[in-house]
Image (tube, rainbow, N blue to C red; front, side):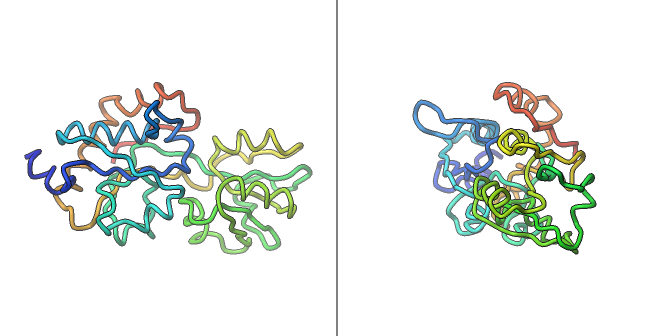
Length: 241
């Protein structure tokens, strides 16, 4: 069976793994050879090993760019947040890890809870086309989303334009809160970003293999061991599908 799977998932003889370099929890550094290092590159390498082919990493600056290349035969597997907006061209596994998303509010803010942020007059800084931006777009009814390019851009916008809130992944907000005197992180989460592995819609057998690989990796403790190996804070193993 690996031969048939390899023919579908790695038609060039190499598993081309698209990696979102913007996710600092899943890509925590670089190897001496310059390849991305971290939980998601290690997951891709383990899949390639199971298929019996070498892995080649294709780095993308943002998850949006990575998703845009889904189904175009640029990459074979893509490691990004599983979002309905992206699932039109990409078949996703269940999540292997998840990351809490919440808000940072400035000093003196009267906002106390995540639900209060969705109020008239509240402007939320957000990194455009991130998985949590896609969630906010579907779910925010009263507040205004103010989009910008990248995580640093969102922080600058939040500070410079004195916005009422900034959306982000909790681990990143833990470092941002240190940079903005008096700011605080709201308890709880508005969503948990589900990080999964996707492949082109046409790869039916490949998608089934990836789904079972992910469930096994969670159950066996492999995913947990990668989180510990890379010492990532704020990442948890996703529950079984």
